[in-house]
Image (cartoon, rainbow, N blue to C red; front, side, top):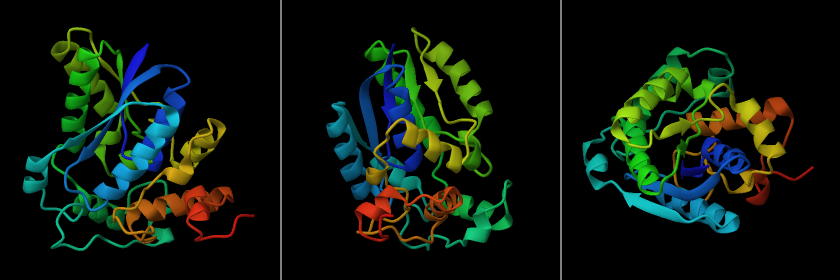
Length: 235
């Protein structure tokens, strides 16, 4: 079996890639630059992971998507929402997480990414596109849900001759589950970048940083990224 992996260097995509490598041959990782604040950091970390795994990668620049995206993940005219641990500790979406999701939404991002990746998959004669969709983010991002995966698989059964499918090994997992599975698979979480910003260090207060922190705290595990960056002392 062969697969194309969508890689952003985020916790979820790194875990999904590492887990998928155990079952399928990753022919290529696709890294997208659509003007997101963390693009430079995502590319740097994704390239490091691909080099270590011996996986070829393709960096695809989507200038037009940057131009039509007015939300804070791309637009520097808006502030990225800051959340607390309490805001992300529940099992369901809250008013603040709904607001944060709306603030960082990129028009049809996952739909666009998957269709581009499926084109590569068909050309490379691969059966799958690997993604890091998960149940926790599906609370506020419907394009992370099992229903979205099923719908995309139906579409791709018509738009690709070889019936490319979405491989979403984390689709039923929350962040704690993802970390546990990632560590079992020896995923390089020390090179995973979750922050919506692209500074030298994670901001620690955006929703993505806060979800990551909450999961590691609940598991009682030091975040390997923060250890490598010297932000926490390794136990």
